[in-house]
Image 1: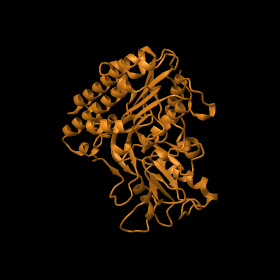
Image 2 (image 1 turned 135 degrees about the horizontal axis):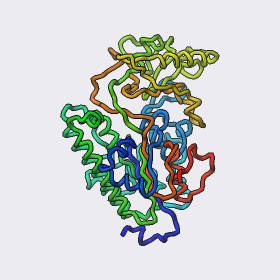
Image 3 (image 1 turned 120 degrees about the vertical axis):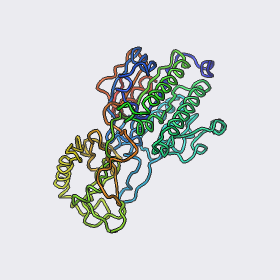
Image 4 (image 1 turned 90 degrees about the vertical axis):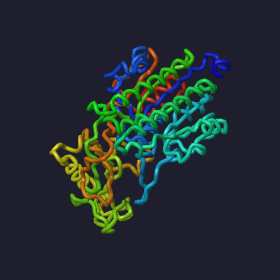
Length: 448
């Protein structure tokens, strides 16, 4: 029996949310024997595929998932964002998230929250009873609050994130072992504080699946040498979810959701190399290239993943595209993106999303003008100089993020997971907690 079983009555709704970075719904639906827990949740409540956000980058997805609003409100668009009025970039952290997190709404309503390993939350908030920040936290100790948690993590030799460099090796054995150790340590942390803390809202994030998918997705699809290890990893994940589910009191609703789907990766695609070759981009420095080095005649540049910016006069420091020509020049870039073909003639881009369609809010000043959503196989990178090719088929990763086919499972008989997206998760949690919020506070809607 956990501490909160002894202290709490049954009059306050409680919710546990387990986030899984990069779990595709089809992976679960096509192999229920590997996922008995998630399959059981779908049968007891509901489960299904949901859409992610544009762009489906983890660093942008987690703030959107935990606030219920699009990047135009969160102010976070990717792992690297651009300063307003500058070519300088920065890595968004927790304090860069401009929207209200679901646990902040819960604590404002007088509830207690435990939040563990959620990305883009560094430094940890002191107004939450327990928080461990996830990636991109620099180290474990400064990412944890309070002192008791820091002590436990030090004694457990806790790992914040899977070492992706191990995935670059041809022999993936060490990578798989490290991913599994990280997963098991994460589950042990969650089970410890599910039992020990007196919480109303528990939020924990498993991020190792995203790393595993990046390097082993091809093995899974093509029955490669590490396919069995891939499925064993996911069987262990499902078992951990099952153990946490079994530890929850009957009056706690469990929700499990992912940030985006996954699909095959055939080519890393260097968008700025393509822009330079197509006459959209040039550099002042002939030997090196970066966002800070773009030349005075550059009309466009790109940031990961598939974010395209016009070099707009009055907005960019060296902008050359007149504001009066914005629509015409942007339409020209859209046409070029839609006509872009890969080495075998396959279209690189599935569709191009304009900024006003994807991003709405008070923090859209750094929003890209366009986001190119690629077809499967083409992972759109920035690729500033030096690059000798646009398409690189020789990278170590075989899986890439997908906008479609994220997953959501709600262990509640009134749940209906259909026509849903990532922005529906936060309002669903708030509804289950019986926490009031204004209709305009979230872009999504409750699925319960």
